[in-house]
Length: 478
Image (cartoon, rainbow, N blue to C red; front, side, top):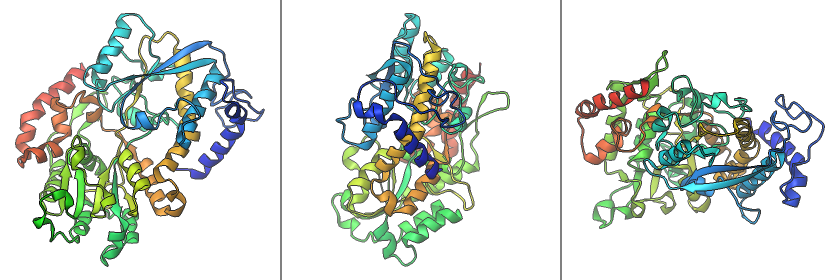
């Protein structure tokens, strides 16, 4: 991920902004007279954005929970972590450069919550929020069809610079040719990971830590290979336990959203965009059926332990030392790798077949801009600067949070993280399903929903939901 370039950018950024951060006053950062990159047009420009004094408030609406609560914002420099300080410094720099005051308001996630807030703003002719951060699917389709959000391509001040704008994700989620769901290094990406117990790996002659990493490099890290190794775990004592959580398992996982990353890892997408710019639902085929069969075989075995995302008291973590492989979200990975005495390694999700290119589903949300914003130029410039600093400063610190001091001690894990974050993808079905109980959701969540329902007839499942899900997409295409 161009680590050397990022480090140089970070050092330059620190050199530029030291006077501001040292004083903690919201004044424009000091600048030198050299060009920092091809985007910088004048000596006082940052990422091509000239210094200005808008003398304006700027409000960002944020959902509660997850990364948004812990890794996006900081109120002041008393926050202890490096990423908190980096977040605070970023806001100070943007405020000083544009002459604005940035505020944050929070909203609780839930179907209709975001739509209602933006509808009130639009219908009232108000300018309450200039940027809104979103969940990965809540209300997104409704907001686009209602034309409540801005086509970000039309915002002045936005460069779509490849260094910090994720055009691949934005292109894959276009609606009628417009880019309404923003993705850049303003957003902290949220793939899921495969973690493994390094001590267990080295205990088996057939495996070994180096062998697992080499599987990834050779593109032989498959679902079958992972489960073959998982079956080496001694589960003989599990039958005598009154509580399954006290057992030892080859593989444990959330049997819900984290399972949905398996199809994307094998480059299977439920929804695609046609040449005419319309959404198209993929029909039931052997691709998804083969993945489903593998997952059912694993979750039906005695080597597997699972739970649902809302069963916090049922989660079996890697730090128990009784788990060989486990799926994990970004937040779970941070907590386990930094807080565990067990040596934990990182791998991408395995694929259905060998030789496949790596692909990692990004569960991060997006940013959207209300279509009624009074000053699109200011909004575009703020987004550009948040994205720029995300690339040059925040992502550097976020990596340090992910790995802590392990980054220098565990280069193989750093290599795996680079591979994962360099190959992020968005699934249109996830962004468009709008709520967790829609018909499109029944197609996207086909594996976990069927596993929990103990249903094996996948063709019947598709027959039940496919037609209604297709109609939902056709309504978006109208």
